Length: 227
Image (cartoon, rainbow, N blue to C red; front, side, top):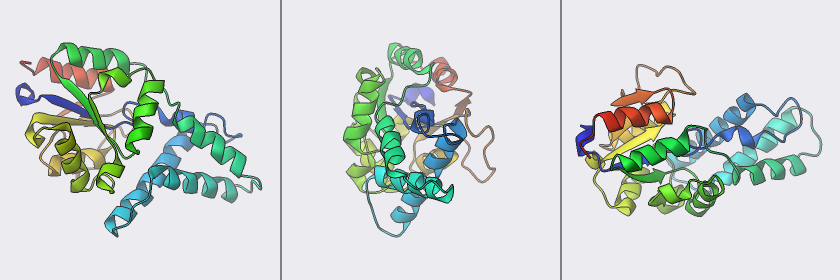
């Protein structure tokens, strides 16, 4: 199967980019990785709901709402400065430590690299550049291109059309079961990064490949490829 894959297509937030930076400068006890992951999950959940009911707004607005709600519920009176600090940090998220070498190995193995992300295209490209890995990505397709959010089929279809490939020639790499579930339904090969979830629900379409981090997933893809 991997011998037919031309493109390795990444989710970004939580897969390639470490979201812990979102909460790193928030006041205690909100300056933890678990808070950042929770905020990202809340934002993604509302984005999915809007897609289901036919609405769209930029992903930053969902994250702003999640941050504001979390801080107000904790009794913090002046939340705006903290919200702005956290949102500014989104543009400076770092790649997970293994990612640069993994991307380089995939390129050397003959794969082409792209991203389909729930972030806005321009913001995603800027964050990848800030993280020092932008040059690895030949194409970045954000939610604004489809005006919808993953795992809606239209997002993968739009992304693949912009990249210029067929679903069977692309492997979606994600750390989220819902993302792989959607990609598999759209006809893509899938690879799951276990770092966050650890175990998938048995109702999720099983991935074709899996690994503890991006490097391990990349090794599996390269090992099965004739590229």
